[in-house]
Length: 327
Ligand code: CP
Image (cartoon, rainbow, N blue to C red; front, top):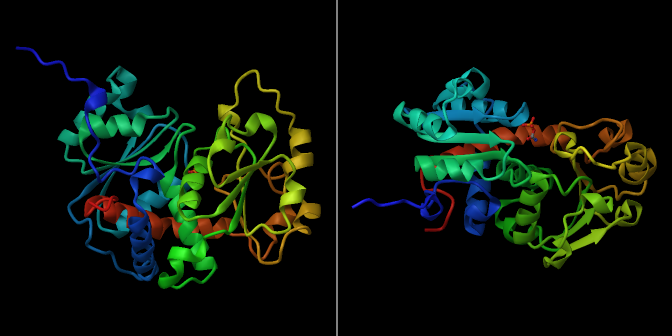
């Protein structure tokens, strides 16, 4: 008898982090607790043995600086063996399929796969094929969960929060996300995470950058006028224009975009002195942000990069131990 296996029916293992919905609310607070522990050892000349004898394969099919390097530092700090897989120098260039490549890495002993790809769904497909722990390091316009978790850690440190206040602190905070929301995997992960924490989320951008139907989600408002939103904003999250994802027929007028949505010196003056400014990087300077924005006391752009290392250490540790769900 022959069995045909429908790949859609194969489940992912529960130590995969493909979207923010894969991590429970409890495990988000556990993630923050672990990140703080790892943060306290990051500058010490020691490595932790947590991932000793584990092989972490960093599989990036799309460009990256922050995510790739911070995952590599995080894995090494936990004593993992790091396999830096690059598609351009692999046998994929000789015609080997992605599935065969993944099975090959599994046969070579990989335990955790960190995957970035320009197509949505590739990390979850790899998780089903390999049945290994897979961390999504950004897939197309879908999700970038470790960016959102690292940003949450950055906020808890910048607000100087004690762990016992994590549960309720973000409730009703006004988080304004500005720019190219349609093409942004970072925005999708942030929306899921801030929604779970009870924030009031306002999405601001030109109509062509606002995903259709998003206004029907509870806790989300849409605005086309950035100036009106700035005064009482707690967290202002500016997004990168994803030039590589804009269609050929895009009618985006950069000068108009700058005029209405750039955080320039004039808009900086409309902000509360307590506001925190974030951006996932890389910044298109002069388009999303002007120099005046970088001088804001609450500008966290460099902190986001700094805290991404303990955040990714915590994610790797959870992947190698009890996973991300409450089960
Ligand atoms: N924020 C982010 O994902 O940056 P990289 O593309 O440099 O990894």
